[in-house]
Length: 98
Image (cartoon, rainbow, N blue to C red; front, side, top):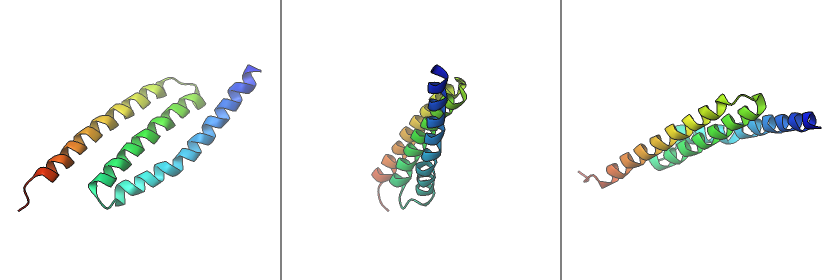
């Protein structure tokens, strides 16, 4: 019974990984072609969120706990990048217009 549940969970996780490739691709496209900086920052947040979810689902699929460390690293890097880019955007809007 437990083997059936484990196989089912692995299959569902693999299907979710494939489904998450759609928003990952759309966010990557928005990040590359966004009309403004704010759109690109939001796309970066979405990319990191989807990447963390994919890493967690990969951990479920493969059974290797190292992917949780990768997910944590991606989340931390994404948080720091978002904070620094938002500070840059804030400084850019406060600078006097010439």
